[in-house]
Image (cartoon, rainbow, N blue to C red; front, side, top):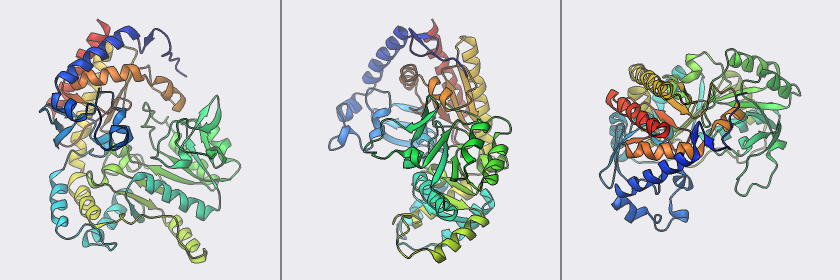
Length: 460
């Protein structure tokens, strides 16, 4: 394990005093550039608890949230007229750019035909076969968020296996699915801190082991009481952790041997290619989830199942007691989702777009790495397809514990605000950057230049 100490007089090789000075100065620059935003939201948005419509809007490290006037392609413009090259892209929700033209056209067309009616539209006829071909599983359902899709898929896994427990990897994130909110502390599973209103010991029904630890995985599955392993192909909602060579092969072999289902959550790793990490690297999940960008920014998600899972689930449904399944929401599988999803799958998530995204992501990776080397920073860059991240610690990281230790919130916040003031927006969590089909080479070059300017100031 890498030795990472962010508790001393420096963080990520930078003195705390210099980090504090950078953030203080950049906060003042931010405020001066946004007098209209400051007047409108500087003291919070009226009528909303905490001053924001969603609590995580307060997690941005800027002095107050950026009040957006419009977004198009890979650019955001705020109410003060400041233009930002957007590499956050709604934390993957707008991974293919803001309002891709085919999706915008599909939304306008469907808006005149009705937004929801609990019945399929003709677009649904096209989507099913597209999901089969693209992601390799034969049976699909539509939900509204990846959280819902993961929750429903886990219910199916428990129903058909008759097992209560699931297994997750330390540092994982699968939306707000309750049973995944566990972690390891000193090698022991515990509830994650900060869970609002959680009165249960979630470790009673969830096991947690470190990513890339095949021996620990094998031991955790040995009791044959785990219904499903749920995982991303790459840990992404932490400092990014890539799988060791052979890890996914071992994961599939061990789950099959234990009679445990495997759920792959591609919500963030769809950056890898048109069929996600699963298709590119030949993974063989029993269950598959994809949320956020699948409908070009319209809230939607999909979850699929193998022939075997579908057969077992159909058998279960024939014998279970009648009543509400606890799965499904009224606005799921609505015609607006179908229209936006069809346009995204047919015209936006194309091989040509992914080739361009990957090429620019390679350029960004190389450029950021060059800056880190030039200024001798003890940092590194990680990438999965069009998703790039700079991490303020040595790497590569191998598991969730290392990822947590590498997270440097004070330093990352200062860098984030400084980049905003250079006209660049990255994700507020873990320095994540996405390349969209609308992203230009000039935008990538500006990001690299801005990152170099910040690095120079931190190391001067």
